[in-house]
Amino acid sequence: MRLLILNILLLISISACTTNDYDKKLVEQESNVLQGDIANQVSHNVKVLFTDSNVTKAILYAGRARIYDEKKETILDSGVHIDFIDRETGKKKSYLDADSAHIDDRTQNMIAVGNVVVRSDSKDATLNTEKLYWNNKTRKIHTDEYVDYNTPQEHFKGYGFEADENLENSTIYKVSGEQR
Image 1 (tube, rainbow, N blue to C red):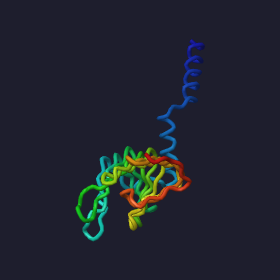
Image 2 (tube, rainbow, N blue to C red; image 1 turned 90 degrees about the vertical axis):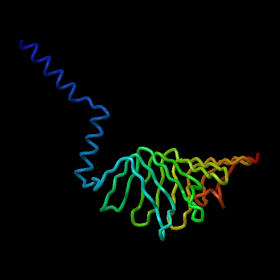
Image 3 (tube, one colour; image 1 turned 135 degrees about the vertical axis):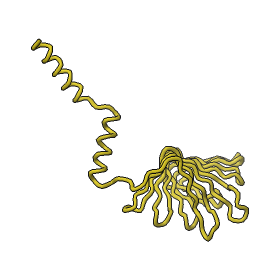
């Protein structure tokens, strides 16, 4: 009987020492709560309109949004999709997909992160990168990261990119590429 109790205690102590991903997430969440880093609002299957003078500039969709009032920041994850809308026609002119994004709630500027793809319907162009900044006021995008840019006429790779959200008037820095 005594040997059985010792074995049970040994098993309990061994299992208490192992951690899995769920345990790690709980520890991380507890740490965030202790540091006061808890979202004021959490929403799922989010749709947000970016407007200026009653004109829709963009429509954002995300799997989850966490809003932090004190930091004035919104964190989007579980897939992010943004349709950029043409001011004159009111129709979608391009879109952005990413794994996640951070929005500065004061300026509405955004940083898209992870598997970022921007596609321009009118220009038939696609940009791929890992991190991309969008300036809400100027409606321009830029990055210092590696980019892969494709159109039917050309394919460029490089580090650094700047353009409007429709991938027009674009500049690629430290470029290598080919014309088709």
